[in-house]
Length: 348
Ligand SMILES: [Fe+2]
Image 1: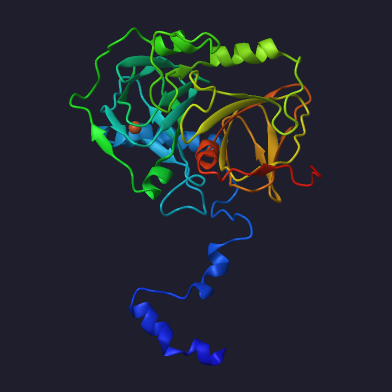
Image 2 (image 1 turned 120 degrees about the vertical axis):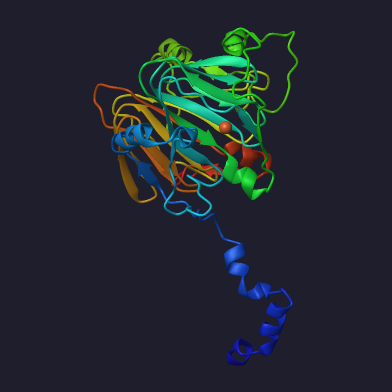
């Protein structure tokens, strides 16, 4: 062994841009996944005053990217929130606009607070209200304008860590600062939102959902209609997936979005998945166990759940539901044959 360590042939290999696989094998072929991301919680109550501070102090030019990045302590360079996904808190002020642009990365917005802003996606103005989920799929032009009188804050979710890792990212500015409105406002939501009745005259196009906004109103209506007539999942409660109406599958080719209602005192069963997940607390209080750590959560917090970490949801309230929004990279893993999920401790 000692002779091998000093064998000058290793230096010769390095000089030829080659390396001995037998010295790397254990790190390259893991027995099971080991995410660089760490389980983590971002406290909304702590970040919100800073978002408001930068809303007051940034120049107009910088204000176009007024996003507090939620950087996982284990994924700082390049920055990501969990593997292949990025989340940030964006704040916009009344009267602000953003330069219209498009990029390969798929994106969504989940609206946290404020009203009377809209984003224009490929010529359709899509209005935003708290609890709404908006889509800006890859290569769709988007910009925004805020007509209200209070700051507006939303959670941005993007897959640019994935597109950048594939070295397949493009970004373009639109010619004009804002897009013109080309169709009636919120048309796609009104045409598709019923889910079971799709507009048959439209062609199915592209891998992403054609729906611009999944409004909170519809989500609340779905939860109310289900009421207590379903048991739901033992891990995720009454969990609903936002779907692409053409396929019934995920809203974006690389990201799925779900919302779950945890009844009072819900104590979820632990599960794990190779998918990496970002959870946003819409309302309610409780905690998540991720691996051997516990993260108490309050409304509007964001939690990173790295892949293959056993995790469970608990609603500690005796009288109130907890509602959690979650996105994950599950569709990307599924497309690549890399999705594996189980219930640790189960005999199944
Ligand atoms: Fe964008």
